[in-house]
Image 1 (cartoon, rainbow, N blue to C red):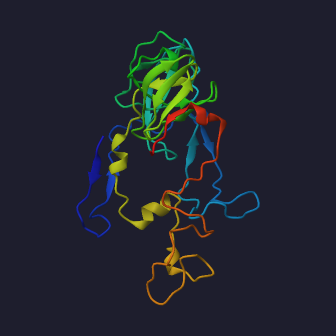
Image 2: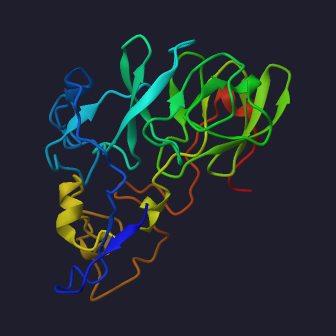
Image 3: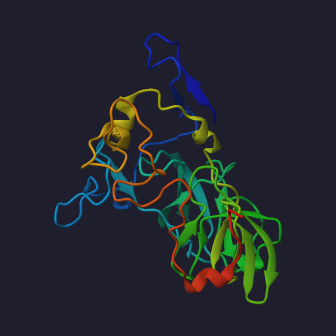
Length: 275
């Protein structure tokens, strides 16, 4: 997959890049795996904005993804590779031997016609197969990793994402996460072999404001352009540096300020992503 460029017939086209869609083989065909999700535009149940700079964006249907990969003992064949508007990687429609159909995240290198399976152990280490972490060899790249057994994959799900199995320690498996953090995770948690596909997504250039609005992102206003009542950086004659360290509109320091509270899971973290 590559980034498609355009001739600069307009200023927006000059640097714009879009993902080549030649790998997509089909549009959605299984209606039961599609769902309408009402856009909240960053508002809570009282209608108040709790997440700024969001809007509804373009209309889209949610694809129900099988993050749990709990279809044990039944092999499946990749029927199609499809676009998913809710994530930056591609998804695969897998048709299982018993007729069941499910979407999974597309690992890099997985093509239409390939066979994938899920099991506790004993599967080949090929992209798309899912097993418990304790049974995956050290050094293997994995994605869609569970944090709690049976809860479904939560780690390494975006385009190009992966974690590496670094070792075993009792009932735990040591993983190096995409952030560089080293962490212990229960060996009975499921993970899928391979790297999430569509790795070139990070090289895509949006190019113009309109594409950002289609994604549901509203413009941001710099704090230094506001009045003092609206932002701690506001006010002053001409352009000023606000005279203080960068903060949020509510005065919380930004640019590296640690906000993580102490958690019971801290003891499972071997080394942080930032020293």
